Image 1 (cartoon, rainbow, N blue to C red):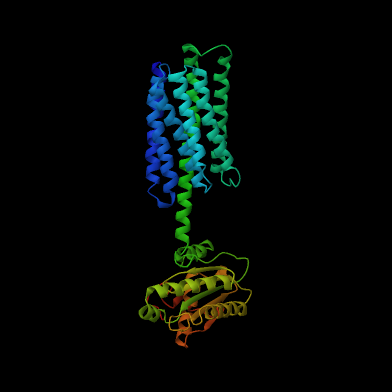
Image 2: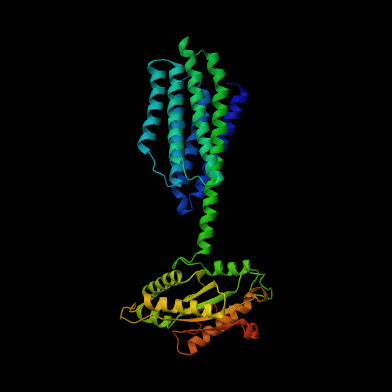
Amino acid sequence: MNIETSAFFWLLTSLYIVFALAFLLISRVVLLRGPALLAAAAAAMAALGLPIDPFAQLSPGLMYGTAVALHLFGNAALASGLLMRRGRPIPVRMFVLLAGLGTAATFFFTLVVTEVSLRRAGVALAAAAISLITAACLRGDNRTVVDRLILGVVLLSALNYAGRILVVSVPLLGGPLSPAQAQAFLPLHLAGMAVAGTALNILFLSALGIDLIRRQAREIGTDALTGLASRRAFMDRLESLGGRQGRRALPAQPGPVGLILIDIDRFKAVNDRFGHAVGDEVLRRTGAALAGAAPGLPARIGGEEFALLVPAPGPADAARTAEDLRRAVEAALAGGLPDGGDITVSLGWVWSGEPHRETASALLLAADDFLYRAKADGRNRAVGGDMAGMAGASAAGPSRIGNAGAAA
């Protein structure tokens, strides 16, 4: 083993230590814990096995067998992590069997029958089989570029191991490998391990990072209790139209829109009398009723407050949608309280034929004002109107949307 080879092994060892630490850091996220811990274990085994390997190559024995075991079981752990991340079945017994057979072949052809070619062929065969099984399990529904690249690297890794089998099998025709031949094979071994292993770990880290970002985005945009869009997602929808609750007007739209605000009647009394568990169930059932009653983006924007932005050709269409929502909730939650009482909602809606001329703030304030009127008029009703007749709506004061303590 020359100085360059030794330095290369230590460089790879340092790299795998970094991989192990990175996967351990990601494993702190509960939803990614399983795949990340398996990948961390695989990187740790590689980091342990790499320093042993160069010293054992030309003097095989217990050290070399240990290095092979760490390599093969590390491959199995990484393959299991890749499959777990995708929700695919993990052939644990097959992976363990292949890694065990490869390790056993190493010890047998080292300690019992000294045959370098068969020893190397056994290791390569086990590693190739693990890679091929992993690739077969990962086939199909690889929608992202990273997933397709992972599959490609796994296949290339299998081909690399298959090539090793061919390389080490040729000397079987003329006798065992000489020390010079073994040394000549080492650069090929290093190159394949370095390229495939490094690429696969980088891609796996990237995939887990993308998964984390997507999960966080879904959590931010979804109300955990009802499954509807969150207040932030609803406001982002308005912002995507151009309004930011300020003086900036909405750009031209495909058609007129209706904004509907919904508030559960006497919800505070429900919580006070029956407890928050009942209140949460009322919120869930109300959200489900709203989601199935009309098109558009239903959102929970406050404690017991919901909102819906819908296409509406005219004021009558917005009024009809609001009334449909009221009836849907009334029907879904009839007798929904422990004492057999009903749950109702009040709605405030506003229609705009030229939404590009309105500000998001004006639309919200107008709908909020109509919601307040619905409460004042006796609840369990929908009240609204055309923005064209509400020039002063934007000056009505701060919106009560999403504020606890709005009229119940």
